Length: 71
Image (cartoon, rainbow, N blue to C red; front, side):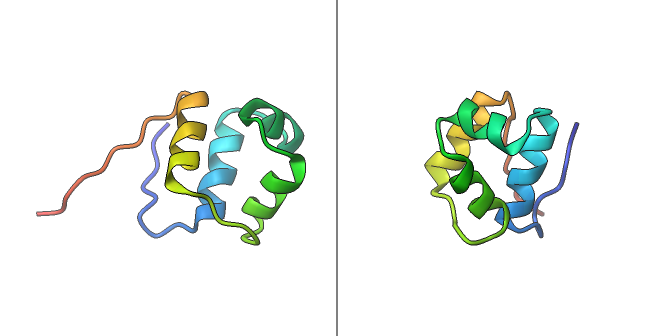
């Protein structure tokens, strides 16, 4: 799967990541070592992520991030 996330909100990216992993919020929380409350708050935009946390979640879920400079 592939997605252009340039104009997406953080919470939408996390939801997509979780859905690609085919996990519920509870399962995803356990998988990444966070509480259900944390995942819920991230997905509703009540809480932001540090970049290193986001990248770790990607690694744990076999999701690669590519950055491309426009010409």
